[in-house]
Length: 214
Ligand code: HEC
Image (spheres, rainbow, N blue to C red):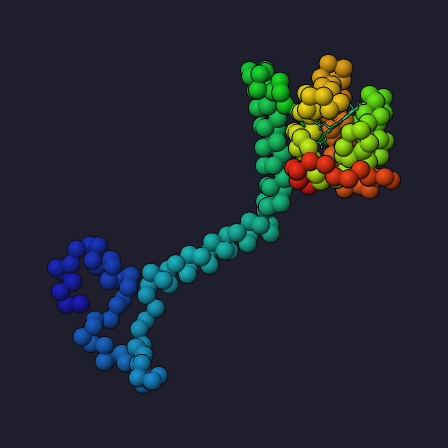
């Protein structure tokens, strides 16, 4: 290190941070540890590493004090941010519905709450669906609606479309678009989806090649 004067500021800093032992003088710091011919040098811990360690310790003390004595609470921060996020999404959708009504005109709502499902069940009787599909959806003229085989496709969107537009021509499943409101069709669809996997008294054999589980 005698030629320190000739080194740039960066090189001097680099040397100070590594304290690397000069390669030619390694014998000076050779220990007598010898593992199958691999020998060990008694190097000092590089100052950059020591400083990194000291800084993490200081940061941990800072966080320890802040978390256990201050009013900072990670869980509360998460809840607050989620609530804020939900508000922003709701506000965005509200405005978007005003700005782009077309985008929402064709959207459907699937219900899972007891009230709407009960409404769907009532409609299944009052709109005469039961006449061809039976009250437990086991099927007679129309197919069984509880199994995972579908003629026209399962899942909310397909079932809603079938009820809206009807089945294949001449099969007997008419389009209910004009006689059943959109909300009622959503309730009917939700009810049918909720009945997936139930066991009717006299289930009609599965029809259709489209397999669809709930
Ligand atoms: C006159 C008899 C009849 C009535 C009433 C009827 N359906 Fe159907 N339904 C059928 C037939 C037949 C099919 C099969 C259509 C096809 O093969 O294209 C069908 C198919 C369906 C399907 C599709 C099944 C599949 O496998 O893809 C759904 C869902 C459905 N009906 C729901 C209803 C609902 C809800 C109502 C009451 C609003 C209703 N149906 C009323 C006869 C009827």
